[in-house]
Image 1 (cartoon, one colour):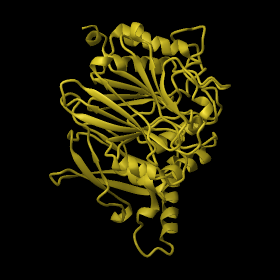
Image 2 (tube, rainbow, N blue to C red):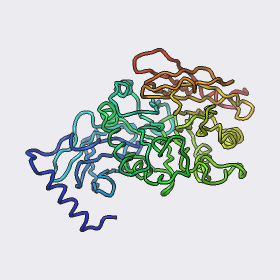
Image 3 (cartoon, rainbow, N blue to C red):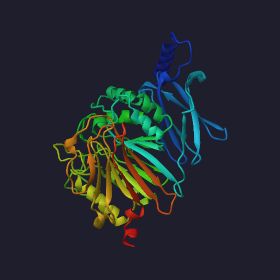
Image 4 (cartoon, one colour):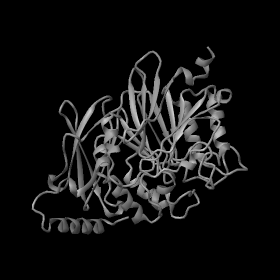
Length: 434
């Protein structure tokens, strides 16, 4: 940790360097971000990265004109990343904000700097989320299309970005480049953004929890993702959030993989680890959301290739999850995965085990590199194709008599894909039995 003397020296040097040749306060080009991270009905997490060590302030204004201020300090220890956490906000409310540097210099302001808090957990409301995986740092109109579609949040499923290293400096550089993509940067200025990782942003292709140096990529992830929490203490990056009628559980299928025996099958390796497994079961059992999306970077079946980073390799934990959902009567569970550079829709025949069929939505890739051979045959496959530049739009609507979920695979250039509609009654053992 930097001493106060070291920080002051670093801060003074940074400000002095920034002042050389500067004739006006720094503008948007002097920082990465800002970004809206986790947002609930009463709290928000905001993020940015200025170009020099300094104190940075966010000013958040409510509709009635009252303003709140929060200050954070950018230091070299955290790669100049700053995060502000705000609480006691009002549900279903738009807040506008701006970012100020030293002596009130405006770092970011504008009509696009705002965020909307979620509605209360219960009641007639709706939410729309965008899911995507496997993205590079090239500019893409896809991010603008997500923005224009009116989503309430963005969920990054991993390989966002590609790092392929456990070197801390490399990981930080890749995250900066990713959040500097113009169209993505414009989107996250006002769109709540959550994420987990897959193998390429965890460290290396097909890597698991035995990877040396994983603490470095986790440190960079924590610095560059403004989540409510990142796993537990200093392990993992799993998190969850509620947006009206949907609760999303974002799993970490890398950090704990193969690091211990499975909590559900001691003779086999774990995928989630005991603590994450308990967290997921508790979250699902206590959720009152009509729909629960359990999402991760990897797919929930078998890639059927030489790699082992899929739920098919850890089928004992997937089956234990299905058993738990069925035994506890958890309704409305839907699975989301990424990774394989194909988009697929599977409907697992789990009626006897769970009480209803469980759907898996695979969405990949955001970039243009597809892998057609991974669009393999499967008895539960409904649709599948290797198509570039794809994202998933999920709208959950609880304003009618029966809550509904509408998932659409969308392609950047307008290529026709497919969609699926589900009702809460269809994902309920009790309602299906009536």
